[in-house]
Image (cartoon, rainbow, N blue to C red; front, side, top):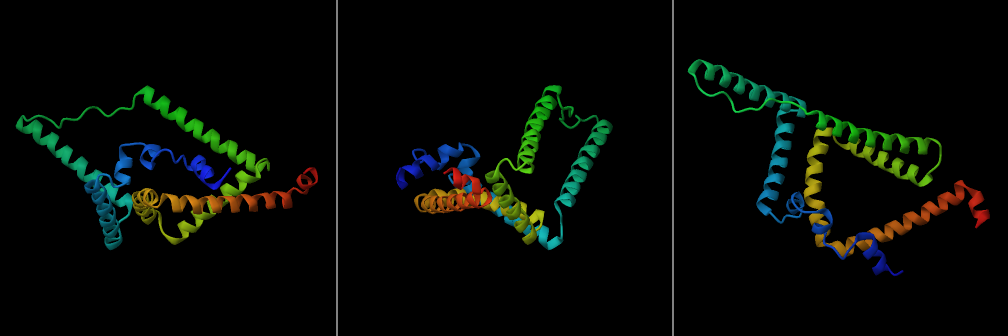
Length: 204
C-alpha cells in the first residue's frame, strides 16, 4: 500500500473536513461564518484580558453573574406583585426522571470504560495503551505547568477556532507529516515491544 492510499485510508480524504466533522458549529470553526468566528475569538481574547487585568476567576465571575441575575429576578417578582404587573416569564426548574436516567447511564458507561482501561494497564495487558495514556498524562501535566486552568480554557477555544481551519488549508502537507511521524512511532513501539518482551523475537 502506497503513501497516497495510506493517507486516504487514514484521513478519509474522499470527504472534506467539514463533512467529516459535521455541520453546525463546525462551520464556525472553519470560518465559514466569519462574523460569528471573529466574534468568538474577540470575546475569548477580551474575557481573558479582563480575567488577567482584574484578577478574576471563573468561579468569581459565575458567582457575580448568578447573584446579579437572581437579584434582578427577585426584585422583578416583588415589584410585579406590588404594581400588579406580570411576573418574570419563567418555567419551573426541574430535571425529569428520564433525563436523570439518561445522564446516569451515560456517566456509568464512561466510568466503566475508564475503570476497564485502568485495570488493563495495571495488569500489564496492553503495552500500547499504557504508552498512549502515559504520553497523554505527561502532555496534560506539562501544559498544566505552563498555565492555569482559566488560561487553558481560553487557549483551548482559540485552538479549536484555529486548528481545523489551518488543517483544511494545508491538509496534504500536514497529512504527510503525520503519517511519517506515525510510522516512526510505530517502529519505536515495535522496538520497545521486542526489548520488553524478548520472547516475541524468538517466536518471530
